Image (tube, rainbow, N blue to C red):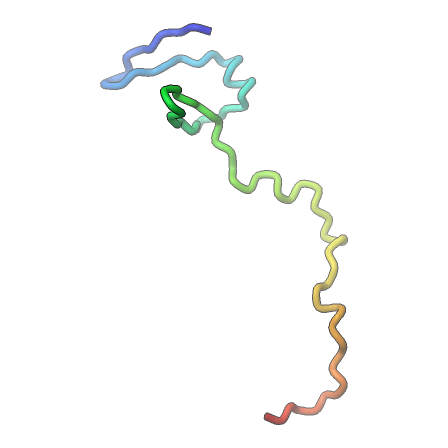
Length: 78
């Protein structure tokens, strides 16, 4: 798709069609970076999005369960 740059104040801007924004799942914020001589515009992703999808707390095991129980309840002598 070919488009033109438009003057926005002292800068230039590009109008991105809604269909392209939807296909790229872009929200209100984007990440812009330069790769060689190409300008790359990418959606901002939350760094930890989806970490707990499918998490089942009942599947967690007790990490200290394998340790032997104390043999007595008397105080330790140092």
